[in-house]
Length: 202
Image (cartoon, rainbow, N blue to C red):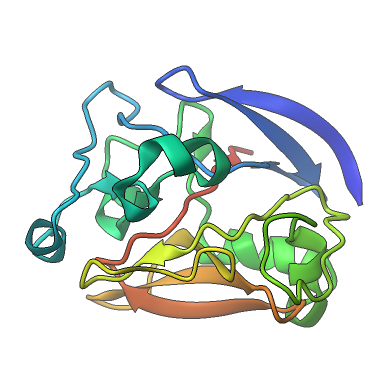
C-alpha cells in the first residue's frame, strides 16, 4: 500500500515525512506550524474564554503543553485557521477537502477498514483495534480541544480537519478511534481544535 516516502518543510522550517498513498502524497505527521504561508503569526490562544470567543484562526498545544506534545502530536487548530486565505500549509500543499479525504478512504478499502491501515501501532490506548499502518499514514491519537476549550481524549482519538464546511457553523472532519478499525466522518463546530494534515497539490 505504501508506495514511497518523502519529505516536506513548513513555513517555520519544520521537517515532516510524507507518504504516497494511491495518487495522493500526504504528510505522515501532524502539522505543527505557527505561522501562515506568508509569515504572519497564527495566534497561540491558551485561555478558555479567549478560545471560546474566536472567529479567526488560532492554534494551541494539547493541554497548552508544547514541550510534551508538539513533536508527538503537532498543534491543534480551529477551522478558522484552516480557512484563512494566508494558508496553513506551505507552497505546493493544502489542507485536504472532504472529497480528497474520501479519495484516501476509498483507496484504503472503505470507511470500515481504512482507519486500521492509517493508525500507528504505538501510543494508542488499548485496545488499538485493527492498527496495521500499512498505508504509512501513521495516525497518532493526539486528542482534541472542544469549542468550550476542554482538552480531551488523547490516546483514544485523532481528529483532522477538512477544508470543507458543512454549513455556516459546522465543518467536516475525519477521526480515528482506538477501539475500531473504522475511520469516521463527522461535522463539528468550527471553534474546535483539531489536528491538520497537508496534502500535496496535484
